[in-house]
Amino acid sequence: MSRPGSTGAADSRCPRCRAPVLAQWVGLVAALHVVADLRPLTPAEQTELREPNRLIWCLRGGEHTARRLTWTGRDHPAACPHPHVTEHRCTTEPTTLF
Ligand SMILES: [Zn+2]
Ligand SMILES: [Zn+2]
Image (tube, rainbow, N blue to C red):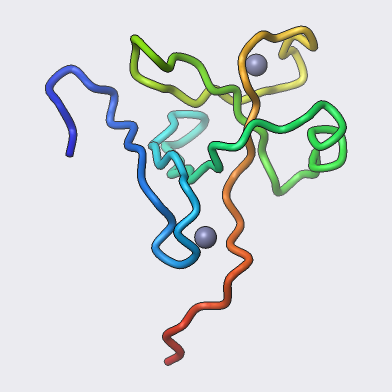
């Protein structure tokens, strides 16, 4: 899965809905495990989604470097050239019920 020198980011798929996601440990305050959707958000979606419990991530890197999620805090530039994504929320009900 992870190559030497990689940051631990892994392209993967949600086990439930099979959506492409990026799963990564992010050191924010404490290490936080983030599963982010790979679909970039439009500016309107970012405004709409900005709520206390839903973080928006700046997706750096890509073709030649490892992809890395960076938290978009209040100081994040509005004209940021990177795609912004949000955490994955499954729209599919779990298939296994206990
Ligand atoms: Zn950004
Ligand atoms: Zn899902």
